Image (cartoon, rainbow, N blue to C red; front, side, top):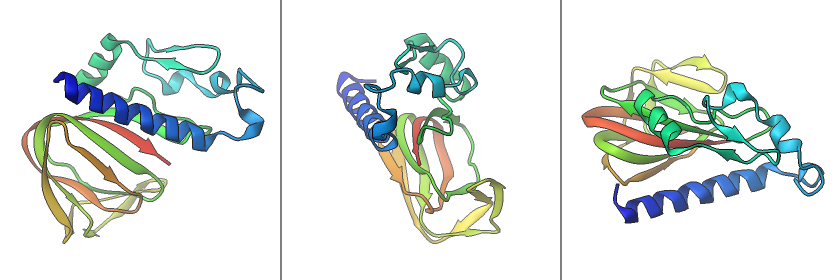
Amino acid sequence: MTKTTKSVFYFLFLSVIASALGSARSPKNSPAQNPSSQSAQTSAANLMPGAKVDPSGVMFFSNDLVSQSFAKGVPIYNGNSERNYHVQIYHRDKTGEVEIHTKDTDIFYVLEGSATFATGGTMLAGKNTAPDELRGPSMNGGEARLISKGDVVIIPANVAHWFKEIQSPITYFVVKVR
């Protein structure tokens, strides 16, 4: 990853997280009034093993942990009921199903590889697979675009999206915001 790409990525990542944290807080649970409220809400089950959480709720993920997450495709932070975001890393070497998240906006940052990514359109034969999640085998219509290293895609809630074709294995960083 080039220095410019890293700078853009970190700026985007920090902006999204700051926005998500700001919208999730209310005066009654701000750190100034209750410094332990955020750390109490952060469950070890939601964090990648080895992550550090300080008493104020700040989470730290070392380069080694992030590299492991990239290699394994496991979430860095899988959220909890008190936070409105999740941080995940995925790796794909084959296509997937069409997805619709009825409450979550997905923000993708492509780290490596390329794929034909389709958005919009109508999901065919969709089924509920989890609360607020639908999946189906394909979709009609929409817009297909080639995405590759350095691209950012923001998919609002209720928009069908699909990795239709994988040109080269793709690794991407995802922030899900509710």
